[in-house]
Image (cartoon, rainbow, N blue to C red; front, top):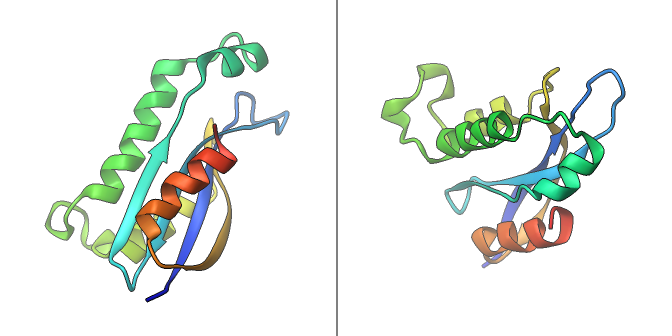
Length: 125
């Protein structure tokens, strides 16, 4: 069985005014498969080459917060974010911070969790 899914790449933006970014994570959502997952990879050397002043601990904390948002059961989140689809919408909303979502893309796949790993390898690592 094939499941429709959406994904977004999470981008590290060291200076919002310059618009430069590095891909650091991926979030996958498939309503039909009941999947909302996040994975990331912070390659310190690459980030520090572009932004020597980067606060890697804050970046990791922001990525972990998104991971927790994906994993929380509905009873542990605000009512406005009670479904995985609503949480995906919150994650993909544009922000003016050092961690920004890219455009939402979609497709169809048999295993959305395996697709998360494939996308992380293809788009981040």
